[in-house]
Image 1 (cartoon, rainbow, N blue to C red):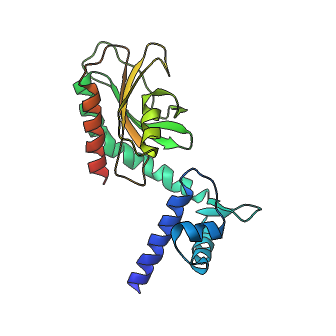
Image 2: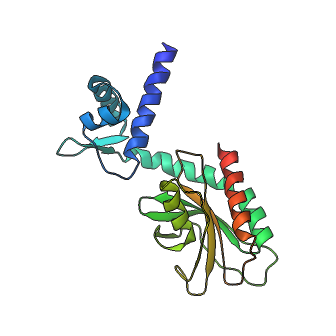
Image 3: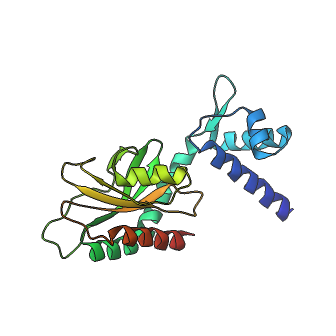
Length: 209
């Protein structure tokens, strides 16, 4: 009985991850094909998740993520912040720039944790809760690269704020999280900054994995 319950839970989580891929809703038949599950199994999963508010069906019968997942997402953000702050603090002190963890919310990037360096005369004030399009800035571009299976770090200048330089790398190896670790500054950055940002992203992935 426990094994059957675990299998049902695993299938339900796979279904939710599939609906969270940004490609829109699916019909039960499409879900059945993409998950390699029978249609009766998919219907049972959808019915259960509908009852909990984790999925919804539109007028055409397509299944989408439901608003019930928002409560879970809001609960996760404080946990992410707590896990990220030690890594971000080390990175900010090493680089001398404001360090941040940015997560994807649809087509936007949301800063969920920000740490400023303690020893610099000037640094960029970057608020937690700041939001920007993923297509702009190093943090968003790193997340878009992650969606394409790339693990590069990105450096940009002046895309979000005139004169500001940013470097960011994706947090890899966590299927449930689309995020990047980055730094932003008005001053010059050392050549080693990209490597330090990549190392910080890997450190955070290990802490969350």
